[in-house]
Image (cartoon, rainbow, N blue to C red):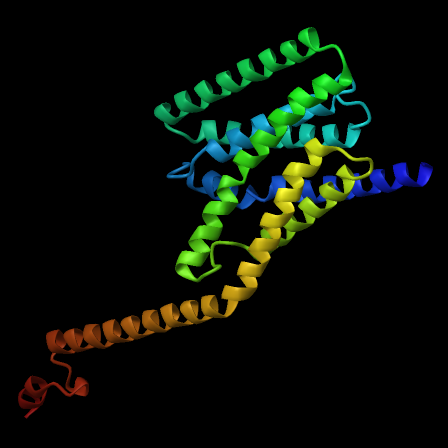
Amino acid sequence: MVSLVLARTVIGIIGNIIALFLFLSPLPTFATIWKKGSVEQYSPIPYLATLVNCLVWVLYGLPVVHPGSILVITINATGTLIELVYIILFFVFSDRKKRVKVLLVLLIEIVFITLLTLLVLFIFHTHSKRSMVVGTICILFNIGMYASPLAVMKLVIKTKSVEYMPLSLSVASFANGVAWTIYALLPFDPYILIPNGLGTLFGLAQLILYASFYKSTKLQIEEREGKGKVILSDQLVTNGKEECWKNDNIECGNPRAEVHGA
C-alpha cells in the first residue's frame, strides 16, 4: 500500500513538472506582445479557457470534494496564477474593445465558479457526489480544450506540413497525458483518467502526424526558401540594370555609355 501511494506521488510530481512546461509554453508569444506593445491579432480565448479549466480542477482537488488530490491542486493553482499573468498582460496591451471582452468573460467565469462551489458544498454532502458533479464538469471542460489540438492536426493534414505544430509541445502533451493517466490508475479515478486518456491519444496522433509529414515539411520550406532566393536575385539584377541605365556607367555594358565615351 505504501509503495502504491509513493508511486502515485512520484507520477503526480512528474505530471506537475510536465504540465508546468505546457503552461509556460506561451511565453514567447507574450514576449513578442511585450516588445511590440500590442496584442495585434492574438486572441485571449485560449488563456481565459485554460484559466476556468484550472479553477474547476482546483475545486475538484479540494479535500472537501475529492480528498487525497493535493498534486491536482498544486499544478492547477500554479496554472491559475500563470494564466492570470497572461490575461493581465493581454489586458494591458489591448485596445478598449478587447479589454471589455476580457473583463466580461472573466466576470462570467468568476460567477460560474462561485455558483458551482456553493452548489457543490451546500447541496451535495458526500465526497462521492461532489466528486461526480465537479469531475464531470472537469471532463467536459477538458474535452473542450482539445478543440485547439484538433484544429492544428486538421491544418497539418490539409497542408501536409508540421511547421505550425512544434515537436516539443507534441511530445510534452503526450508525456503529460501518459503521466496523468497512470496517476489516475493509482488508485482508479475516472474523472482524471478520461480526459487524460484522450489527451494521450491526441498527443500520440500528433507525434504520428509529425513523423508522417516531417519530410514533406522540409521540402516545402526548402522550396519556399529557394523561390525567395530566385526572386531576390532577379530583383537585384533588375535594380542593377536600372541603376546602370540612369548613371550611363560604361562598366555596365550600356550602349549609350559606350557611344558617350567614344
